[in-house]
Amino acid sequence: MDDGRISRHGSGAKLWLAGGWLLLALLAAIFAPLVAPQDPLAQDLMLERLPPFWMSGAEPGYWLGTDSLGRDLLSRLIFGARIAFIVAFAAATAACLVGSTLGLVAGYFGGWADRIISRIVDVWMAFPPVLFAILLVAVLGTGLSSVIIAIAVIDWTRFCRVIRAETMGQSRMDYVENARIAGYGRIGIMLREVLPNVVPSIVALLSLEMGIAVIVEAILSFVNLSISTDDPTWGGIIAEGRLSIHQAWWVLVFPLITLILTVLSFSQFGEGLKARFDPVLR
Amino acid sequence: MLLQRFLIRLLTMLVTLFGVAVVVFVVIRVAPGDPIAMMLPPGATDADIARLRALYGLDKTILQQFFIWLSGVVRGDFGTSISLRQDVLGLVFNRLPATLELAIVALIMAVAIGGTTAILGARERGTAVEAGIDIASGTALSIPDFLWGLVLILLFGVLIPVFDISGRVSPQLDLPFVTQFYLFESLLRLRFDLTWDLLKHMLMPAVALALPLAAIIAQLLKQSLKEVLDLDYVVLARVKGFSETQVILREALKNAALPTLTLVGVQFTFLIGGTVIVERLFSYEGLGNMAIDAVINRDLPLIQGIVLVFALLFVLINLIVDMMYALLNPRLRHG
Image (cartoon, rainbow over all chains, first blue to last red; front, side, top):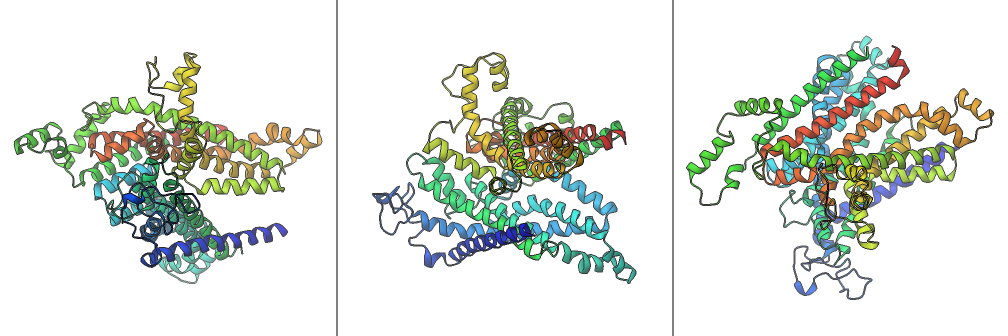
């Protein structure tokens, strides 16, 4: 009893911390032109590799220092958040819609529908995901929509597998049988009775997937295959930081911290929401 | 029973591989870029381009190209790399050992770290130690290998530069190896100086790959151990006077390991998938690093070959784990 209360307290705090960071980053992304102290693209060779504010040699107004072209790091991180959140929301939603629908159909109807969908999932799982993403973006051409499509094409299986298994479990329960006896149609039962019970899992996965999408976008821009090289992206900043790691460590450290906080927040936020929604856990 | 299960699995494995071949073939052929145009100097004539297209079989229909390629693959001929102008299978076999060594070292580390943590957590269940382990494994699990790699580069490449963060082996060394399994061969030849150099290069990428898997093992094995530790036969062992660590190692572990084993199999394929970007991050000369170059150069035959080899590895691992599970699980063995 006590254990349950402690872990619920813990999950509540985690939910607020994670949600707080995500809200902060989202607001920074939306109002980027207002909050960014400098122009994220402005190069100034007089200001190259300025250290962050607490070190000697720092310039006021360049809080986190500058990169090897004299561009302000904080402003680039803030503008990079725009791409990160657009990709996170769009790609995760698309993957969720496709994967959850197929998972629901496979789990509820079973039979041939399940066999075909499961076989496709098997094929998809045999691809190394990062290589698949790089291949798709190379094929589709670099750009924001290519990145979003590539992530959705690869990661729908994550939703499909979980939702299929959950739907199968739900379909065996008495309430589904009762609804059938009461004369409801199969699709009606699937959407009105089963779907609401798998929603907590969908929500948790959706949040997790947003974090994964942010990482995949960073990986793609790290290998220089994401969007145009002009727009600042977190992965692009990391790629620059990896190159100048011995001259300017801050160019790698700050985007890395930003990415880690964002990914952790997305997964914790999802877990927290699931715990709130789930009638059994609650 | 076991043979039947094996044959069914083998058949589905072939279906999966055929599916992978179809998907990768179709995806690549939709690409708008012309790989032939990229190979030739700007002044090349249309006749030159047409001749080269015919040479690589790119003038035929997609269906024809697919069956020509597939009949070659069945005979072990994966075609010729467009960018490197060498036999694809030779290139892949040249790089595969580096990736396998990295993945296996990472797997061993994950099992060692995760297993030790799980045993410690089960022994100290209900204490602050267990709570600390839960937080640590939860964090390790949420951060993907790409980010762990960057953290390790900063910590042990820059802050405390003790490990190499680039390449597979120091370039100035004279290598006596005849195979590409450098680490394995250095051990066989008792050249421990080379083993050490290889390990110094491999350690950081291997840890980056191992940490998320170690966290999963720690969580799942700890859970299974805690369940088993309440069973009668374990209680009996405790009454007999065995210490808690002895009880876990001698009695509980054997029966708690089975669910973890199944999971490790699936997760090991994820780990191998992770080598693609981790090898890139550490400039490690493995298959994944070559794959990214192949995509950037639009080297169609090479991409197809590499993806198929990865897929083959994945389904083989799943097959092996499935068979091990069937062998170890008494219910399936006698059923």
